Every structure is written in structure tokens, then in C-alpha cells.
Length: 307
Image (cartoon, rainbow, N blue to C red; front, top):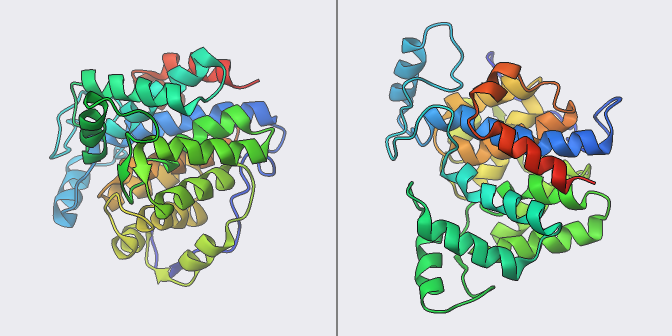
């Protein structure tokens, strides 16, 4: 995305219900889940790069190829194989597995699933999960495994829970709040998760849209630099929404988000889920699915949770 004075337009991203054309709610719900995971894997190679010059150098080195599934993966904080999920994708895969197995989201059960997954995880653990392990080892249970946080951990759970509960909006919002409390304490984390769920569930979140619409930027990189490149809220949600409001679809939105740098993987899950839901999954390139190591597993599990 390029050009001067790109401004977010007031066009609420009415995902699962109003923007999918001939696609059914079930197809859009499936697309939201698979789109989020594919987006995360596609972005992982450029995750957590905060140096603008470094990002420009990597983009130039890649030539005309898109930044997705960047080779070699260049995240400065961990070294995973191309096509693997980022730590954010790895965080929500146990949620998908748990809900698919149980047929519902039970916070007390998932909290222990997440705790055991964190204990055996060989990748990079963030502070929320490090604290969860300490609390779990001390015998704590839900909701006392959570810690104060202003990151998008709740928001990245939204696609899975929306896909599970899209037919009952009241129950959906209850489950979203319960899911946030598995890992996070704080109104900001809860509000961002609810906003992400409503975005997918076809409800306008005008406050967040207005906050983005009030700003004018040259492109997504400039917008995200303003709202904040890090994991923190509300910037992570505002940056995601700017990309959604100024991009034509799944691939364009994700490429713009990748090159904006910072914590582009947590943003990618939300962006990928919404854009895939809007287009019923048709916009996810076959090549991207093939490169995502867990795609077949995610697709199989997603089909189990969507009724």
C-alpha cells in the first residue's frame, strides 16, 4: 500500500454475517480460524523487527518476492523454521485443540491445558506464560493463573471462539471474557478481545474505528509507527484496524502489516481472520496454505468446532 494521505474510511468490517457474499456463516467461521493461523505463519519470518532500516534491507534483499514466509526467517528473538507458527500461533493452537476435543470452551479446563502446554513448550515464552507456569507450579487454578497484561492475548483467541459461538452473541461475549481471564488481568485486555470478537461477529465497534479514522497516514507502516509497533494495547488493535480499513483483502493487508514491523504476528492473526472471513477463505492463497506447517491440522480441528 502506497501513496500519500491514506485515511481509514468508515466502513465497519462486518465479518461473519454481512460481507461474505454467497458464503455461509459456517464457511466464514472456518475461514476466520484458518486465516488467522495462516497469517501468523506467513508473518513469522519478519516478527518483532523494530528497526525500520533493517526491515527495508530485508525487503530489498527479497527482491520482487512478497515478504510472506520470509527466507531465511529473520526474527531477532527466536529462530523457527519457515512455515512454523510464531509464539502467538503456538499460544492459540492448544485452545483450538481443546475446544475441538471438548466441543465447548470451559475456562477452568483450558487454563490447565494452556499451563501444561507452556510447561512443555520449547520455543520462546513471553512474560504472561512464564508467570502462568510459576503460578501453576504453586498450585493455582483458573482464574488465578493470569497476570496483569495489556497485550492482545485475548484478541488472538477471538477467531476460535467466534467460530464456536457465532450463533449466540451473548454466550460468545461471555466466553471471550472468560478466555481473557485465563492469561490476563485488566480491563484493556478484556475490551480489546471483545472488540476483536465483535469485529468478526459483524458488529461495528465505532469507538475504535473513530480513533483510527481521526488520523491520516501515508501507509500502514506510518500508521503502526504512530499507534505503536509493540504488543501493547490499544495500539496493537488500532494498527490492525487501520490495515483492515485501508487494504483490499487478505494478501494486501497482511503484506502491509508484515512490513510495518514490530509485533506484526499478533496483529496478523486478527487481520488474517477478519479478511478471510470477509471473503469466505477464498482469498487465502493455496501456496500459503501449503507452506503453513500446521494447516491440515488446523483445518481438521476447525471443522470440528464449527457446527
